[in-house]
Image (cartoon, rainbow, N blue to C red; front, side, top):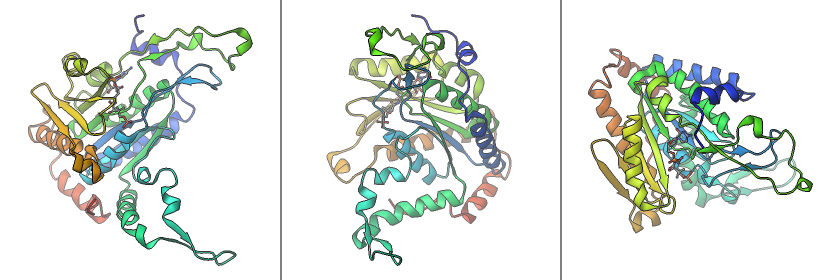
Length: 340
Ligand code: PMT
């Protein structure tokens, strides 16, 4: 079934209830960093849901845990970017991702009980916790991260467009890193029942419709000067590169990070109009806990810098802005320099 237009999607789906609050935060964040001439990256992360009821009990979801997005956000901070981390509610987040499940509790010791109870970090955990804590505190002190959350695909699109509207002022200093696993299918609002579907009514027949691809207005209208990196996920290797190339051809953005579902955490291919570059972690890297996102982000940062140095589609940085930004960030201890 053909998808409607993106304008129609926004006309039919109301903004989320916390939308205005988030829009204000996005605007303030972008204005502040723009003033210092900083680069901002929008990292999208995690999967979107497709609700089956307006009062949602059930929804269609996908596999993404936000591993790629949350790790990448940390590496962008290390490269001096301010980061808008737009993530699926309850998916992995930068810094805390290192301590998911019971890991954090296992690092703590309780000394006494009663009114003088103290809790300390186990000596053998300090080396693990401290570097992450240092980087987290530095990012916080510098106001270098803004986190906004979505759950459904329509919430994702409302936030995405609002973030783009705010980022547009940065021109080529804005980098979009669209790692979220966004649903291609949804149920049109008028076909979604208000209340929980009842089993007495029999098995429901659910017809999904195509979601319009938001990359088209994003690249052409919302942030035409930004450096846009999209992702392509496939399960059939033979489709991966052709589809990545087709996306570049169609949307005319800068890069597609192509990955296979099964190997996404140790192999990706960076596909640009000019070339493609495979990044593969060795067995030793994996064993040592190396994040592939470190290499992906380094390469994208390098290409973005080249793009900016080349004039970034004609828009130059304001004179002196880089030095002012560096001074302000250094005063706040950002970007952090601690080793990983
Ligand atoms: O979270 P992890 O478990 O670490 O997994 C990471 C990841 C596999 C989710 C990530 O690396 C990844 O590949 N994300 C993109 C997955 C995806 O949505 O691929 P796609 O081929 O369906 O979409 C391609 C691009 O189109 C995406 O960048 C998406 O932002 C964009 N899109 C998608 C749907 C839509 N309606 N409009 C869009 O613009």
